[in-house]
Image 1 (tube, helix red, strand yellow):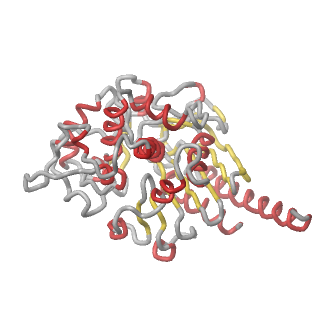
Image 2 (cartoon, rainbow, N blue to C red):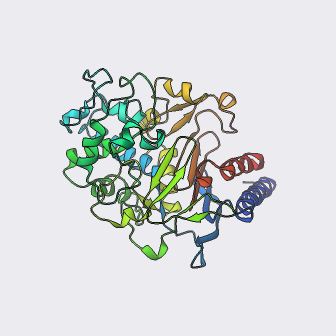
Image 3 (cartoon, rainbow, N blue to C red):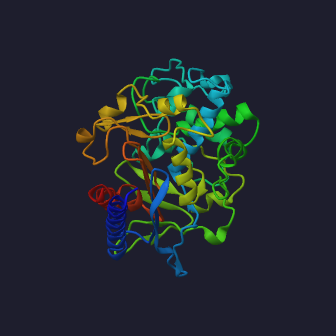
Length: 389
């Protein structure tokens, strides 16, 4: 790179870093967040990194880059990669019925008729399943005592699957899109196929090959675990042993200590904990084309809208691949991302995106629900990055 180009690139990085830091400072100063770790990578190189605020406000513990967070739905891309490795190994098939591995899992349609849920339906959230938090109190999932994988410490997977199967499907599999507990069901499929707990399967298929030491369905070093907070006024409130957070979708139930209970089932949709660096390594594996875990062909399929356009009805300009949302029309979606950008988040307060056009991968983990997942901070952060570009 010539000196003028080097200087231009250095100026661009400096501008981006300042803009990102301003978005972070605003969220902390206005007491919308307690703490965060943000990593911005371009073409595989981290061009800005920042740990800011407090990991544990009550104990005045400063946020550090190696802090471990409860990942919530950032679990989904990791478990999806594990599943797609099994697909590549011809151990499971996208069009195989779930009952091949979970013969008792047979939720029926509202009219009582049988339905066939295939693995691709689970991966794309087109299975007809739902989440308790997408219902009002008294809804069928809540009435059946179904766990969303964030609450009810000690609940076995078999019992939660029994409860899920007892509730009618919301639609015929493959005919609509609904964010759901599908990945928890897929976790059961992975356990049945591999014969080991989901934690061990994911370690063998994903985290160990990538050399990730801190990301698992348990916490390896509790001294580095960030406390969990929730939106409140005048500042976020510490979650207790059980917390109820009202969202635009419905009531979300949390039990932050669930991850310490070894008898809690490994939720494929929300049960992992890990660091920002580990999450970045997983996402960069996808951005680079899948090596050493997956083939380029498989990753291209995962990065393409696989939901048959059904998600567009719920969120215009956005489809769903395997493991994440896919921007199909930036103007319609009202986002600065280019077409083909992958994005998702985690309800404990996280967001991430992969922009393959600009070679960008951004991870923003926070300890504050819901601000860190879909609050002003996420908008300020993405706007800052693209303004600097």
